[in-house]
Length: 147
Image 1 (spheres, rainbow, N blue to C red):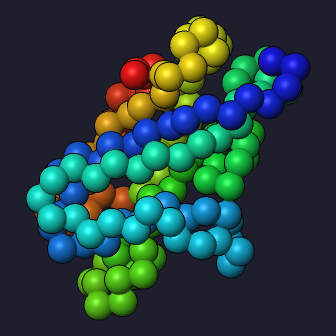
Image 2 (cartoon, rainbow, N blue to C red):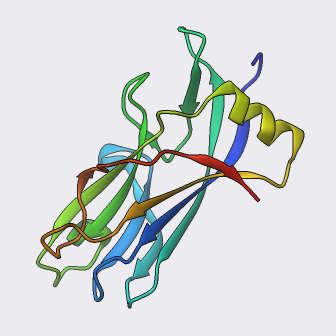
Protein backbone atom coordinates (compact mmCIF):
# COMPACT_ATOMS: atom_id res chain seq x y z
CA UNK A 1 0.00 0.00 0.00
CA UNK A 2 1.36 3.39 -0.93
CA UNK A 3 -0.50 5.30 1.78
CA UNK A 4 -1.51 4.38 5.28
CA UNK A 5 -5.15 3.35 5.30
CA UNK A 6 -7.16 3.42 8.51
CA UNK A 7 -9.47 0.51 9.29
CA UNK A 8 -11.77 -0.53 12.11
CA UNK A 9 -10.90 -3.36 14.48
CA UNK A 10 -13.16 -5.07 17.02
CA UNK A 11 -12.02 -7.14 19.97
CA UNK A 12 -14.69 -9.23 21.67
CA UNK A 13 -13.68 -10.25 25.17
CA UNK A 14 -15.58 -13.48 25.77
CA UNK A 15 -16.99 -14.11 29.29
CA UNK A 16 -14.76 -11.75 31.29
CA UNK A 17 -14.67 -12.05 35.08
CA UNK A 18 -17.69 -10.22 36.56
CA UNK A 19 -16.97 -7.16 38.67
CA UNK A 20 -13.66 -6.42 36.95
CA UNK A 21 -13.01 -3.27 34.94
CA UNK A 22 -11.41 -3.40 31.45
CA UNK A 23 -10.21 -0.54 29.22
CA UNK A 24 -8.20 0.26 26.11
CA UNK A 25 -5.07 2.36 26.61
CA UNK A 26 -4.78 5.05 23.95
CA UNK A 27 -1.14 6.02 23.57
CA UNK A 28 1.83 4.32 25.18
CA UNK A 29 3.88 4.44 28.35
CA UNK A 30 3.11 7.28 30.74
CA UNK A 31 1.48 9.19 27.87
CA UNK A 32 -1.66 7.07 27.62
CA UNK A 33 -5.28 7.63 28.51
CA UNK A 34 -7.90 4.97 29.17
CA UNK A 35 -10.86 4.79 26.80
CA UNK A 36 -13.87 2.51 26.46
CA UNK A 37 -13.75 1.70 30.18
CA UNK A 38 -16.17 -1.14 30.86
CA UNK A 39 -17.12 -3.12 33.96
CA UNK A 40 -17.75 -6.82 33.29
CA UNK A 41 -21.15 -8.00 34.53
CA UNK A 42 -21.62 -11.37 32.86
CA UNK A 43 -21.81 -10.41 29.18
CA UNK A 44 -19.06 -10.25 26.59
CA UNK A 45 -17.30 -6.88 26.27
CA UNK A 46 -16.67 -5.24 22.91
CA UNK A 47 -13.82 -2.84 22.12
CA UNK A 48 -13.85 -0.95 18.82
CA UNK A 49 -10.79 0.93 17.62
CA UNK A 50 -9.07 2.08 14.48
CA UNK A 51 -5.52 1.53 13.29
CA UNK A 52 -3.57 2.28 10.16
CA UNK A 53 -2.37 -0.53 7.96
CA UNK A 54 0.68 0.11 5.80
CA UNK A 55 3.29 -1.93 4.00
CA UNK A 56 6.10 -2.98 6.31
CA UNK A 57 9.75 -3.22 5.28
CA UNK A 58 9.24 -6.96 4.79
CA UNK A 59 6.29 -6.36 2.45
CA UNK A 60 3.77 -7.62 5.01
CA UNK A 61 0.99 -5.57 6.62
CA UNK A 62 2.23 -3.36 9.45
CA UNK A 63 0.15 -1.35 11.90
CA UNK A 64 0.26 2.10 13.48
CA UNK A 65 -1.91 4.33 15.59
CA UNK A 66 -2.57 5.28 19.19
CA UNK A 67 -3.83 1.80 20.15
CA UNK A 68 -0.99 -0.14 18.51
CA UNK A 69 1.91 -1.28 20.69
CA UNK A 70 5.11 -3.26 20.16
CA UNK A 71 7.91 -3.58 17.63
CA UNK A 72 7.48 -4.24 13.90
CA UNK A 73 6.32 -7.84 13.20
CA UNK A 74 5.19 -8.17 16.83
CA UNK A 75 2.50 -5.49 17.01
CA UNK A 76 -0.41 -5.90 19.42
CA UNK A 77 -3.22 -4.10 21.22
CA UNK A 78 -3.43 -4.01 25.01
CA UNK A 79 -6.55 -4.36 27.10
CA UNK A 80 -5.93 -3.07 30.63
CA UNK A 81 -7.50 -4.96 33.53
CA UNK A 82 -8.37 -4.08 37.15
CA UNK A 83 -6.15 -1.36 38.63
CA UNK A 84 -4.55 -0.89 35.20
CA UNK A 85 -8.04 0.02 33.97
CA UNK A 86 -8.61 2.51 36.81
CA UNK A 87 -10.40 0.14 39.22
CA UNK A 88 -8.41 1.01 42.33
CA UNK A 89 -10.07 -1.59 44.60
CA UNK A 90 -9.37 -4.49 42.21
CA UNK A 91 -7.12 -7.36 43.32
CA UNK A 92 -5.77 -7.51 39.74
CA UNK A 93 -3.39 -5.21 37.90
CA UNK A 94 -3.04 -6.85 34.51
CA UNK A 95 -2.87 -6.30 30.79
CA UNK A 96 -3.99 -8.59 27.99
CA UNK A 97 -2.00 -8.54 24.74
CA UNK A 98 -4.05 -9.12 21.59
CA UNK A 99 -1.61 -9.85 18.73
CA UNK A 100 -2.05 -8.27 15.32
CA UNK A 101 -0.36 -11.21 13.60
CA UNK A 102 -2.06 -13.20 10.88
CA UNK A 103 -3.66 -10.23 9.12
CA UNK A 104 -2.98 -10.75 5.41
CA UNK A 105 -3.13 -8.51 2.34
CA UNK A 106 -6.06 -10.62 1.18
CA UNK A 107 -7.95 -9.57 4.32
CA UNK A 108 -6.92 -5.93 3.87
CA UNK A 109 -8.17 -6.00 0.25
CA UNK A 110 -11.55 -7.28 1.49
CA UNK A 111 -11.71 -4.27 3.81
CA UNK A 112 -10.86 -1.91 0.94
CA UNK A 113 -13.48 -3.46 -1.37
CA UNK A 114 -16.21 -3.37 1.29
CA UNK A 115 -15.94 -0.23 3.39
CA UNK A 116 -18.44 -1.47 5.98
CA UNK A 117 -16.31 -4.45 6.99
CA UNK A 118 -14.02 -4.64 10.01
CA UNK A 119 -11.30 -6.89 11.38
CA UNK A 120 -12.62 -8.82 14.37
CA UNK A 121 -11.23 -11.26 16.91
CA UNK A 122 -12.68 -13.05 19.91
CA UNK A 123 -10.44 -13.63 22.93
CA UNK A 124 -11.12 -15.31 26.28
CA UNK A 125 -11.81 -12.97 29.20
CA UNK A 126 -11.33 -15.59 31.90
CA UNK A 127 -8.29 -17.80 32.39
CA UNK A 128 -8.46 -21.49 33.35
CA UNK A 129 -7.92 -20.55 37.02
CA UNK A 130 -10.98 -18.26 36.98
CA UNK A 131 -9.05 -14.99 37.07
CA UNK A 132 -8.94 -12.40 34.26
CA UNK A 133 -6.92 -13.55 31.25
CA UNK A 134 -3.62 -11.71 30.99
CA UNK A 135 -0.35 -11.69 29.03
CA UNK A 136 -0.46 -12.72 25.35
CA UNK A 137 -3.71 -14.42 24.30
CA UNK A 138 -3.16 -18.20 24.01
CA UNK A 139 -4.45 -19.91 22.09
CA UNK A 140 -5.10 -17.09 19.65
CA UNK A 141 -7.63 -17.90 16.92
CA UNK A 142 -6.64 -14.85 14.88
CA UNK A 143 -8.54 -12.12 13.07
CA UNK A 144 -11.32 -12.35 10.51
CA UNK A 145 -13.05 -9.89 8.22
CA UNK A 146 -16.68 -9.40 9.19
CA UNK A 147 -19.56 -6.93 8.74
